[in-house]
Length: 114
Length: 116
Image 1 (cartoon, chains in turn cyan, purple):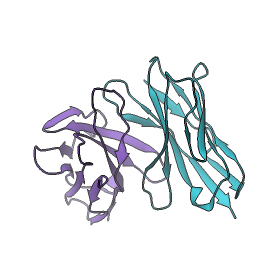
Image 2 (cartoon, each protein chain N blue to C red):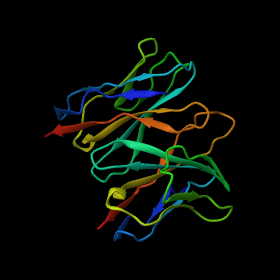
Image 3 (spheres, rainbow over the protein chains, first blue to last red):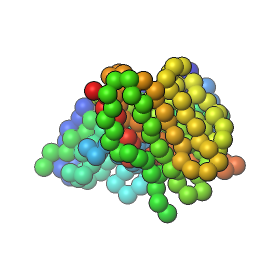
Image 4 (cartoon, chains in turn brown, green):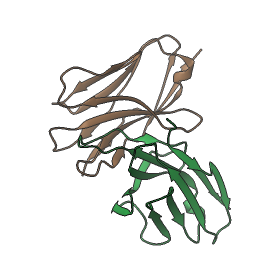
């Protein structure tokens, strides 16, 4: 069974600082995708970024980037120049090979302090 | 292109009543997933459907819960004889599932069910 672990239940940083959220996973697959989703106070689930395991280059979306270490099965999310609107729960997610159902981590509650 | 639509956004039921949650996938998406989020927890997979087919219902409780995705109309998650433990946010996600595997799933805004 696939597992996803987020070891930081809560984090807080000052506005404009950089913060890194960690995620580790376990799988026997070789080709797969990984996702970070954001859940702000509105509770909507919003896709932040996606990484393909076969790509050596780390994915980047504006201020959001990942540090993907395939051998270590680590998939951390870096948020640069953090903004108040980044305050949210962040979930790492891993799709099951074949039917794509997502396994989510327990989440990290991120608070950006003005 | 409208996103994934879910309704109602909030639903209050008394114990023993039925709850019907609806999900319309994004245009062009034929695959629907339902997830449940209990308070202060992450999302847990319930069921995966294609049009007129249940592909994987391994995450769905064996009793009182059912799901369908008819040829026409939205996907429905039905909870019969609700109990207080069913209070949660229920999220629907859709994906196109083209020849490329592991497509991104896009989520709806969720339905918050409260059982009194």
